[in-house]
Image (tube, rainbow, N blue to C red; front, top):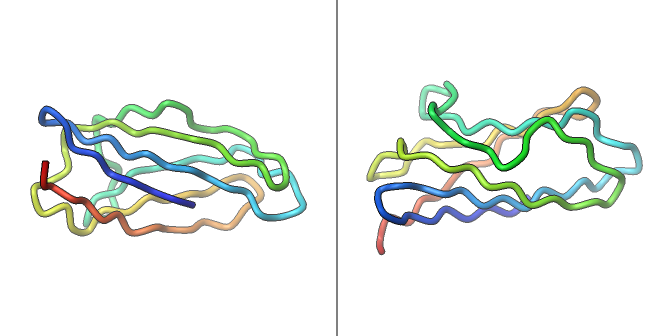
Length: 97
């Protein structure tokens, strides 16, 4: 999974490239943007969510929100699914324009 955070006009856009490395289909893959308390950041708008991935498939997903703080610390992306283990990825937010 690759991630990039872009700040524009008071909004934050999290660009993700999700890759499914196993030999089984990943059903109902879900992404969640979590704050420092591990609670979902709301409102957040996802370009796609609850999708399936074939073995070796990659998918681009964007999450847009206005909530990330100036420090950008403590935010994570949770990736889970029906038949895949949950994984968390720490976000690194560059607030310089």
